[in-house]
Amino acid sequence: MSALWTAADAAAATGGAVVGNWQAFGLSIDSRTLRPGDLFVAVTDARDGHDFVDDAFDRGAAAAMVARVPEGVGPERLLVVDETQTGLEALGAAGRRRSGARVLGLTGSVGKTGSKAALAHGLERFGRTHSSIKSFNNHLGVPLSLAELPPDADFAVFEMGMNRAGEIARLTRQVQPEGALITAIAPVHLEFFEDESGIARAKAEVFEGVVPGGFAVIPADSAHTPLLADRARAAGLERVVTFGTAGDVTIRAVDADPAGSDVSAELVGGPLAYRVGLPGPHWVRNSLALLAVVETMGLDVERFAQTLADLQPEPGRGRAEALQLADGGAVLLDDSYNANPASMRAAFDVLALASGRRLVALGDMKELGPTSRALHAGLAGPLEAAGVALVFTAGDDMRALRDALPPVMRGAHADDAAELAAPVREVLREGDTLLVKGSLASGMGRLVRALREEEG
Ligand SMILES: Nc1ncnc2c1ncn2[C@@H]1O[C@H](COP(=O)(O)OP(=O)(O)O)[C@@H](O)[C@H]1O
Ligand SMILES: [Mg+2]
Image (cartoon, rainbow, N blue to C red; front, side, top):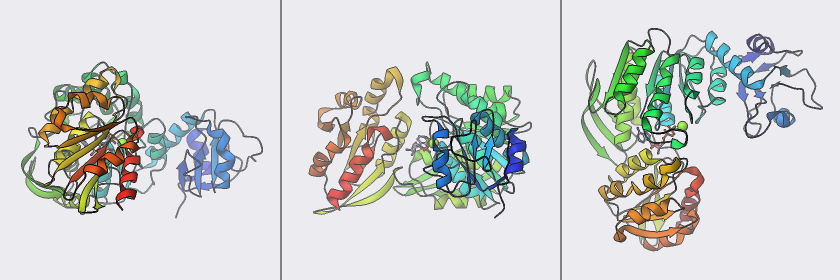
């Protein structure tokens, strides 16, 4: 394996100082997850990374990028820069510059991480593909992912996220994608925005970093489609492709089941039939977005589409599992990793595909700002439409949903997620499907674990 960064290359990229001669094979900003051979970058986030340089070396770091030399650390394996945030960005920029990969960028209110993973998985068919790990999509994760771009990669996919206006603009200028995808616009992270169109404008910043001659892929059937298209053209992009029920890449028919969908679609180049191994209409839409990207890149879409059948829900993101009950089995849909109004609706659409009785246990959706309670209450209609029999709720904001539900649909309410285990277990019976979902911080994962232990 050849080195990702040598001391000399990293010094040249950042303008930093080195004395030793080291080689790093990866990057890390967290000593707890550092892999031996990584360059540890001492950024200041929740804590000051300089306090963990020692620990990083104990865990096998090849070197550390620092803005000051921590006490007791020798200089041989340091890269000393003025500031580690800008040092990291400089390393990312150099990683991007030296790469010959075809680079894609994506953002959106929902579906970033899943779509990124699906796109990277499919592009593997065409060449060596790099992508940002997990949800590394902010001012740290993006430059880190760029700095980790292997010089010989053929393709790279980067996810960009934001909480405020201006953040995506900064990230996309680092990524410099050939094409930018916006997966969806929805009321997520509303704390710092007046309304949804503020979110749409902030997401549209992604076009500002697209290289000349590049392209945009945007939803066709969003209230914000005209705004997104205008912004793409204003950024100089001539190719703006839309996907959805209308637009350039559209659905002709869908045959949906709880494990996925058989889709027949109309692409720019003609009809295409494929299976997507992730359930629900939102995954049909995401798959159309990816096909639009791949077709616009000029790659063989049919070949790409074949890879969509392999996709599987990740743990905590809607994966179905069997729960053993005294009288037989029920199905648990563990979607406890995160939640917002859009992904809640998407999860209800998936639940609606279940044939037996449908139950949900929902925890608070966080970071929704002043209209949070109304957004919680707004789930009542979609729950009724999905044919849900009983709604268990946990957390303060979920009280607003509970109040909005017809009394027959109200299950137990608890302040703490884990307290729902007993009442849920009491009503759960053979053939039921139970969806558990909430923001990570709502702790619905603890309910899932409690149910597994009790039932198992
Ligand atoms: N297009 C979509 N519309 C609505 N919900 C979606 C969409 N794509 C994915 N989701 C759901 O949103 C949640 C978050 O998905 P993820 O891919 O992690 O998004 P992000 O990285 O943008 O937070 C999951 O529950 C997923 O099923
Ligand atoms: Mg993400």
